[in-house]
Length: 351
Image (cartoon, rainbow, N blue to C red; front, top):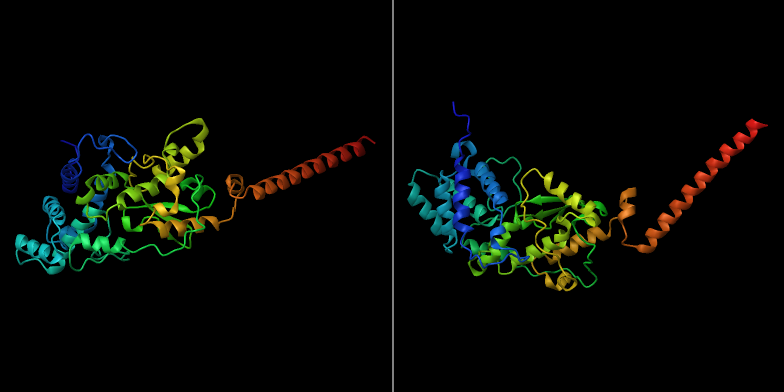
């Protein structure tokens, strides 16, 4: 008997869509850090596709969707890029499936296609116990929805906000105690949650690279993909992903962060280059500026709670030296006190 597991329809669908959407670039194209476009890794995105399929299309054997085959969803994904309105696309789905499907089932199919195309949580999931924050696409084109969401101008004052080279993902966790959690939803990128103790990070570098290379063809606002890549270079500079004796602790931390995540993390994370001083200026960020300001403020307001955090926290050099000098003096005082007690006891025993 053949024990080979059958290939799931969603797996085939994800591979076909990747071939269509991700393989149309010239070999002369370069990734954000200068690597060849052939270095793009699609495994994390394909897993995302399959998760969305299971969540929406495979739920109750396709009871809540009109399009029940991955190839039909893939064709709809491609139609989304033609700037057709939601109303027109829903009519098209109804014509394909006939009148036997409800409007809600057609809506779910369209939302699934939009999620797959842009990695945004668009629409709700039928039967989900705790509905999550989402974008509501009610009318118009998908491009208009996305651009309206990301078009809000930054409002927070950033004059006093500096992004030194030491501000990165490692310092957030190891010094600030702020947990980094990866998200599949681009709209949640750099969102600080849980009383400033966690930050969500969109880690799909390869998806962002594809959107950047598409340029005007991408439904994302111009510059959003590239700016998101720059924020990932800020948090995970390329030097951190390379093993070396001088950076062994940060490299180990980075590998553990990726390896312990419940889903596959894009292998391109940590391969977005390293930002120079002029690239880390706040005015260079538009789409994510307010969230960077909030994250930096949350980090600056943290105080060390463990000896490890005290050791690594060099944000205030004077305070750091004062603390460790005082601790050293205390330790020496205790040691000398113990030695004197032992010596006194020994002298008393001799006499």
